[in-house]
Structure formats: structure tokens, C-alpha cells
Image (cartoon, rainbow, N blue to C red):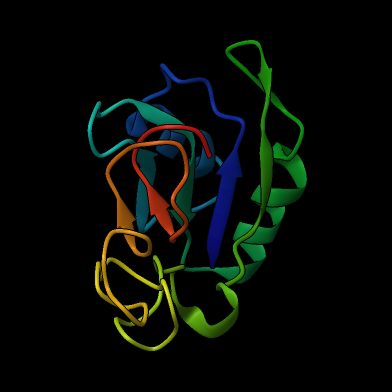
Amino acid sequence: MNIFVGSLPFSLSEADLRESFEAYGPVDSVKIITDKITGRSKGFGFVEMPDEEEGQKAIDELNGATVQGRAIVVNKSEPRPGGDRKSFGGGGNSRPGGGFNRDSRPGGGDRGGYNRGGSGGGGDYNRGGRY
């Protein structure tokens, strides 16, 4: 059973999280999600338990429990609809101004797609200026 654990204290380690769940049965894996750039915890993670009944008991008893002064959220992890992550922009010339393609609008130019600055300029991804 894959279990979502949210509202985690940022200082909580994977070993501490594992220990909390092992009180209810064997734990296959523990993963606290971290920011790719800073490496800092995002405050949520996932625990994999092989036995459905033990996993459900852990959910029932740990949901709302206080860990290092924070009430954690624990529930069964459901796969994302479509099983896919969100993607940026369109697929090149699939629509006007879509994606990261500078020349995707009729006439080309800097109006669509990736805009490095200025005050707007349209497009899907705007790095600077006002939105």
C-alpha cells in the first residue's frame, strides 16, 4: 500500500518517518520529497507498506497525530489521473504562442513562446517583467 504523508516537519528524516510506520508493520520504502535545487524537504513524502491491513491501521492511527509539534496528514496515496505529470506549454507549432518555440505564431518574432523580459508580451512562459 502506498501512503501519502503530508504536513511533515522540515527537519524530519526518512529514518524517523520509517520508525513511526514500523510500529504498525513492515515498511518497504520511505521517501521524503525534497526540492531539486536546495535539497530541502517539501514537507511531504510517501511510505510503502506491503500489507494493506497494516497500512490502513497506520493511516487510521497516524492521521492527525502530532510529530515535532505539527499535526500530520496521512492517507492512501492515489495515482494522478492519467498517471502523468503536468507539462509546460504546447508542443511546438501545435497552437499559436505555445511552448518554448519563439516562432510558433504566424509571422514569428518574440511575441509568443519564451519571453525573456519586458512587460508581458504573451506566450506561455514569461521569465521577467510584469505578468
